[in-house]
Length: 187
Image 1 (cartoon, one colour):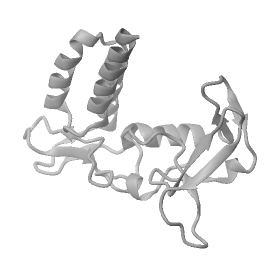
Image 2 (cartoon, one colour; image 1 turned 90 degrees about the horizontal axis):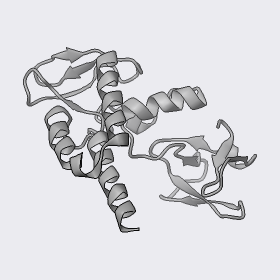
Image 3 (cartoon, helix red, strand yellow; image 1 turned 90 degrees about the vertical axis):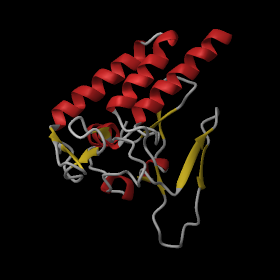
Image 4 (spheres, one colour; image 1 turned 135 degrees about the vertical axis):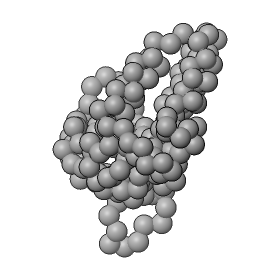
């Protein structure tokens, strides 16, 4: 995975030597497109000044920091320190925020964003949950999303809205699962 690209819809990965020099940023300044013939095109998404590094995102952006940063560390062996990963709010999106169970109004975010195993702390009441507790919650919800039947999705969304911040990436994943299952039903 370190220097290879997924060649969907084909199976397997291709090693593209020049392409592998592109660095990662979760807030990348370019995107890449791979044609069926294997041609790679990199396109700027913003103006890139002479001398600035051209970056791509190694992962899709919809995952929250708690999952994305761990995946980057496990697969590419570095800790991402881009502007999104350095900000506990993920650029004010709150994609990994949990609703505080103690005060029920505050958002729980990583206490030390530089530490991949940091505990989560409420901004309002300072209640704290361990990283292991947060990961167990995230993994449990991710497992539910993979197997939930379409008729139970609305109930799961309502349940998750009591536990997670409304912008949490897991709520978006449940909604995407609904769309995917609905599309399967129409085929």
